[in-house]
Length: 214
Ligand code: 6PG
Image (cartoon, rainbow, N blue to C red; front, side, top):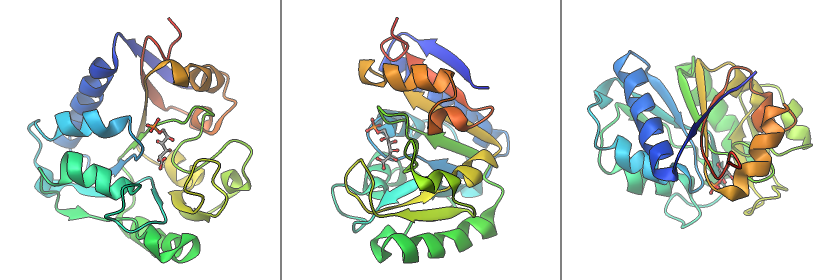
């Protein structure tokens, strides 16, 4: 189902993830979907220093909070500060979640449809096993189409826009990164295929010893 690689530290996970993204981009991948939250920040900082022909790359987002792009909670702001201010992708398709869950999802579905296939998707994972804004047991897990809006996210803020599980499953490669003891339960659940993060066949994981409960 999923393949787990355990590294000693969070820094090694960030380094390995950055190296893998750079490798697939050098190998011809053109559509790169980035994760929000906090885990990927160090990966993005290291990725900005690697040799990548960003002029061939389109950057997309796995999910976004329904806040302005310069808001402290914005995933776009985090990716901009850690990566996009330092590299120049051909195109950055920001997820316009400030339009609201429904309008933002509708707008982004057109973007994803136009740039498909998604070559590489990076995801973080929540302590409950959610990925993007797809939460365990939430009806959104059964959403069809490419994007969806959520108004009752268990993780604040409540309103978000997300790629669907269907869209993520259709991607060429999916890499999930998880570090810290707080993610150990999510990793264990994913190993049993019991959470959204465990429902992505073929996903590869880079985790540190703390998340592997080692
Ligand atoms: C978000 C993220 C979310 C995140 C996980 C892990 O918008 O919050 O997309 O899915 O990846 O919640 O978050 P951390 O990396 O901060 O632990």
